Length: 218
Length: 415
Image (cartoon, rainbow over the protein chains, first blue to last red):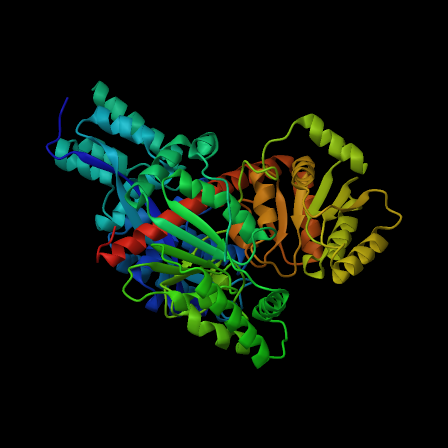
């Protein structure tokens, strides 16, 4: 079995949610606010909503889409926003531009609805991530497997989803390590293909464990 | 100030079957760098009210993971609490004749409490507005971190009261709110901490079926027919009359019962008035059960929630509305108003259903009674939502994260 020179360091991650001094009450205001919003806020309302609501596996994609549906009662816009797949993006700037483009098209086509006030405003937030190393690390696939089984939701989320921002949105910590430390390109690609929208964190983790098992079995 | 003798420490292990063994193990890992750090929590009452209940649960867990956690309660006379009650209402937007005498009373009791107990812990958390003036005791250069935990809605405060309090608020390192909606524009960081429930408390723990059956029998409730329940004080802002109207709309289609249970009528003239109106509205319908419960009836509340088919929270205004989290924890489908902190708990069509009117509330109830499988799924997801976001272990994690973040900032590091 391959053994890595650099071990995979498992960490425990926790997130402090910070309230930004920014909100929107209409689609038009959301469009304007998104121009000023921090990268961290856009990350929070897209990537991080997947972690916070991982137990919802149908119809929930990001906070903007859910707000359009539940607070604005504008299902057409909600559907469009929900179609955003964060894995398609390699920068927050691109993601921000696409969300703004969708909103802009909607405002142009539905000028009246775009000025309707929501039942509840959209409040912008962001998180501060705090990590502490866990007292175990892995150098082999069996070590990774054992570590995966011990991780909390938040820590699996840190390595599997939040890591995308650290790695410029291209991949996750596990795939990155499979590729760079063990030379396992195929396993890395397959781990990247796990659908984070239709899985809970538990089932995504289970899929990853099964991929590791298959790789180990050869 | 009085030191509250909270239970010495409480083991996290008892939460492992609920929150998960990994979560508990990682809470200990997060607490590791903070071992032995002194935490001082200050509020204005040792018993009664949500803050005291929260600290009673939280402090032992903090001690259990190695923090030196203390709880201090302000010493003050009735005149101070009359002023702070007026402040409380004014901060929620009520009219209030600003009086310099009231401000002076507030300043004086805060000064006396500063002298009684120097707060020298590494982390100091001041709860709600009453002890805000204690921040003047903060020593510059001590390295201590002071945080204000505001449990109330500050979105529409009385300008004079807010102008009086704000100079203290901005002296803290940060402020914690329960919902983004409750926060204000401040020059210090604002953090979001959801209120939490304790799954092992009498109000939330599993109950024996025989006990639940006994409670239903005591109150004459028929377990074989659908039970719609709203648990809340008899307060106009909880709209109990609106709940009765919604029930009557549902009753045309389903042979159901309504339970309106709560306290707050015996020591509150307004509550007694509302209770009387509700009883009048319910008169002649044996399927409406209006129950005035004693101030502390956690097991009865627990049993009524668990026995319910649907739990309603049709508030017109709301703080966070933790009764919703209590119902979701019990896997109950919830129909609730989209006000205050409720939409944070009820994610529409995912963990419950939101409504904006009597008619909407009735429609959502009818929908759930017609689709029990959907009702069951909402309840299941609601339970998951509470486990992930609204348990006392999550609250402990947020405090540990805040303390680690503050400690790192002190060293010019980020975690």
